[in-house]
Length: 314
Ligand code: VTB
Image (cartoon, helix red, strand yellow):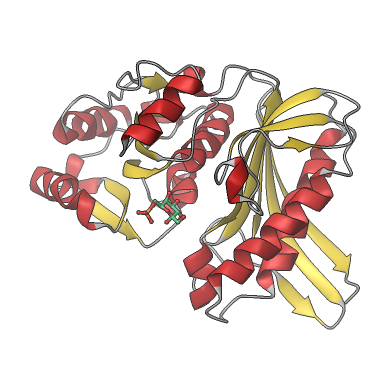
């Protein structure tokens, strides 16, 4: 992929964040999501590329969402797979709390997992524990393996997990092993990526969340040298049929990071909407909007933090 595209992709998440940020703390999550989606689509469509959404917010009939199979870009230029989460944390934005972001991952055509938007069981770790995890193993075994790899005691480990009733058993297993939890209201993309950033204090991410969020996290973690495994969790026959239509017949099998993201030639990009632990949120000063983004390039494994100043036309 042409390196110059990276700045074009940053513009996409910046535009989405600038649009969604206007809705921060207004208790209007749908409006925030729609604003992010529209800005993302418009900015993508100005890029010289032939992109396809391989995993996103829903199916064609659920428009205005960026749907699976949607074509993005001018139609000229490289053929690319795109994973999108126009607004990771719609509830966060509505409530005006922390860690909402806009995010995309882009890779060469045919290299990102193409799957419906459904639940996915996930495990994520940073570079030190890469290759040591097993999504099928008991929680305690994964904790022991991560502790050993990081030269820590199990008691020192912090596991990020979405604060949901469905996770009660896993949470109890983490606590019984002596480790600690960091309960996350929303946003398991960031929770997963945090495992690769020492200062976050998070050693592992467990639990089920959205499949698009899983692909986005895997794209970032692959470039950061971390590890990620998952299993798709269809809830209905309709979801099972949709999986089959997409060629995923054996949905019970574990998907490893290289199954989810097959190439190194990837970009993961995110822009903060509300202030968070990795990125500051959008700040508005009159006609000026200030954004903070991260760009992770798989080929070079470079990580860049980019501050943008934007003159906004109202
Ligand atoms: C996660 C999280 C999202 O949905 O994937 C989660 O990353 C999973 O779904 O920010 P439930 O909310 O149904 O548990 C979000 O929290 C919201 O899309």
